[in-house]
Amino acid sequence: MKIKDIIKKYNIKDAHILYDEEMSKHTSFKIGGPAECYIKINNIEDMQEVLKITNENAIPLTIIGNGTNILVKDNGVKGIVAKINIKNIEIDLDRLIVKVGAGNTLAEIAQVLKQNELTGFEELSGIPGTIGGAIRMNAGAHGKEIKDILIDATAIDYKGNIIKFTNKDIQFEYRNSIFSKEKYIIIEAQIKLTKGNKEEIQEKMKNFAEWRKEKQPLEYPNAGSTFKRGEDFITAALIDQCGLKGYTIGEAQISPKHAGFIVNTGNAKAEDVLKLIEIIKKEVYKKFGHEIKLEIEVIGD
Image (tube, rainbow, N blue to C red; front, side, top):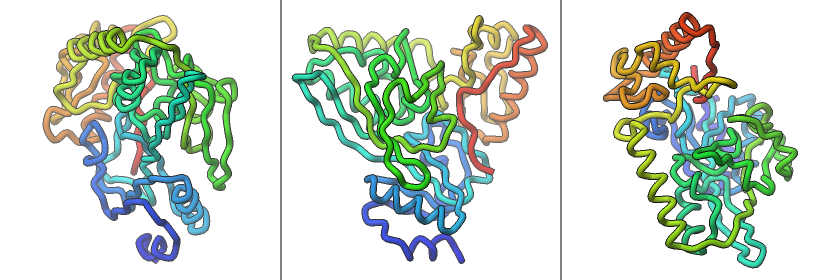
């Protein structure tokens, strides 16, 4: 039975469903073949119903956020790709606690916090992703990581059970957490901030945005830093020292502005990006003896 016919038998109320949908439309890299079924999830109940579909019919499930830290392969993704679009921002000004939906972007949250004069989020404001994705990989910038402000996160396991995780439960590490190791889908979170001044918050956000624009190749589609930092080295610096800046395969390029980024200069294929990744790994190992690890996630067939 086709996946479309299977899904029709279930009660998905509010989700946006597309079939054979090009994932290049839904990733910041602008790369990726078709998802057999792409579902934008707007509430917890629909996510639980999708889990019921995948469990009862042995359909593969891939979870994404804003598509900013992934490379989708050219042949696309089998089964269901579920984009978590659960959005909600509730502010308790007395306790300085903010509850957010996993689908809210960091930029959206930052603007609301600024208007309410809550500080402590500015460093993260320019990271192009959702809070769910940020928690999953313990995203960070300018010396601050999401773990530094997170109180707890609520997630669904693949059986549809809702579970609350404290900060300690999440087992945060550098660009890693329990959510990137085990099968849970983050649906909401609570963060703790401090009282601030709107003008000062705006100035910080502006400075961080200018830094990002100056240092990173924002003019081309990309998926952020391609590789994680090492324990005692900065991977981008090693790639630069290998003389790889500007190296190009097809229309995928190691950014001349920042060696830690691979960019899509036109209509790059995932295959081109993966070839560049292998060249980078090989050259860095040959010159420095370091095995470097991907920060972006590769999905698909």
